[in-house]
Image (cartoon, rainbow, N blue to C red):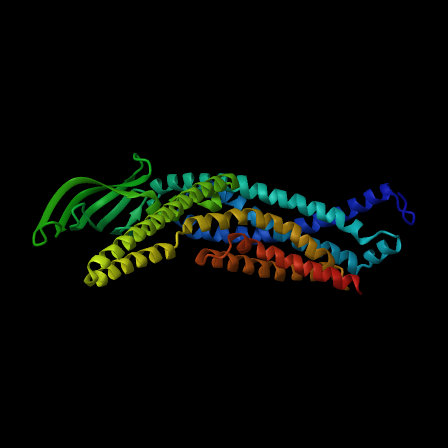
Length: 431
């Protein structure tokens, strides 16, 4: 193939040149976003972990396990900014005009960037789908291990903590244990209970719970089955169990965000099955009530013919059954957790796919750049990233709080970027 002196071998050189500039610009943008998210994560860990004198090696491992989330979110925005910077640089230095003068159509310049954008999308999906669950699981395991050796991670000195049905207050906390513990809760009989202890420590012998071993214990119970009586007791030692999921957000298990797309899909199928079973049960109840209504109606007609004075009771009975049918028909069967899982499932695909939509938007938009292509591209990329992230958060909030389509909640931002890209393309073609 030969176009104005340009053959396939020359195209390979052009693809390599454009691809190299795009990769360099994308890598630069990736470093920027990575540093922003990394510093934010580092500051959070510094406040929660480093200040509690946790060994530096363990802190480094916690940071390592946090990296997949940072990489997964950095990749799409890096592709956007990288494309704007690379193509903006070509446009501002008149290289685009030179390519056109050589008979090279813009679609040829778009191909290598689009293919590389697809590669970044696959990379982002792989990190989000595999490495993010891996990092979350290992982060939780390590944090749990650190909690037992450094209880001050969750129990600060002279603090008050709420654990579902109990309130725990304590004095000084160190690696040696917890001093001056006071627990307010209820016993199995419903009696209000006050447990005080001179000191205690955390024991990890029972999986799934934090076992707080108390020493020098005093217990006061008031109420319960006999409301006017109280019980006062002592103990040298007492074990008090708290579910791990109630101790810290780090122990609440894998949510849909931290699971692989396949695992989320399996959970969605289970929840859909449960919802469909409930809907089927509702239909059967409605059918049963209608059948009963028909029987009551026939029996009522016969009764009224024999005893006209029974009209009022028959009408009241039929009205009651009619209300039950309407109430059952209007009863909405929803599973809010299913909505959340669907949102996260579509999000796992929409964010990586954003790389491709960003490329479609960025390429024609960057062609308008006249001067300082890279600087303008970088600034515009940041603005579009903020705009996209705002739409994503708004869509997720709308999907969680309402019954709005989970698919549209997560994909509307991509569709908006696509429309903006097509508009930019049409404007550039008509110049």
